[in-house]
Image (cartoon, rainbow, N blue to C red):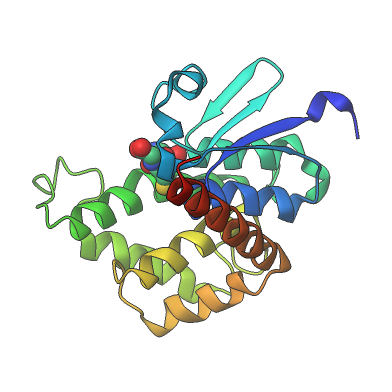
Length: 216
Ligand SMILES: N[C@@H](CCC(=O)N[C@@H](CS)C(=O)NCC(=O)O)C(=O)O
């Protein structure tokens, strides 16, 4: 592999950066991890704000480029390593649907789910980025029902994103545990990359907890 594809992921365990970490594992490429202890508030310290002024993970460094926003990171990484075939390339008929479902996650699903979880009414239907929760959710479940993956027969980076997201949102009861969702969650969660990140995150979380408890 060319050295110019070395990437560094800014990560904190059991957060949205776990999805990006799962994607790196799924791609099977070398990477560096810069781990932040959020329990100690490291994401709000000047050192990290100099990387990402939002104080949020994930963030990715590739050469001089900084990429933030998990969907941008997914799109970037899957294109950076085309040999893993996790992104339909430009010209492939699935490229459009792939982009659609990646962006649907950030532009429709997340705002709808967070509004729902925090009991906030959506903006009026014509202004709301996701319309209403029911419409957003039905659109998603209709797509998943075609299965087995978001793009049908083809597994892609979109499944790493949606698999992780639907796992945590159903776990926290933010999304109804419909059979179509749960069978998808099970399918996407069965990947070895998911198990590897679970183990890594558990270790990191325990180390962070211990550091905070001991005041180090
Ligand atoms: N829009 C961002 C959201 C990232 C985000 O909210 N990350 C959370 C962790 S799941 C975070 O870094 N929170 C730390 C904080 O706000 O202090 C994305 O999609 O990457």
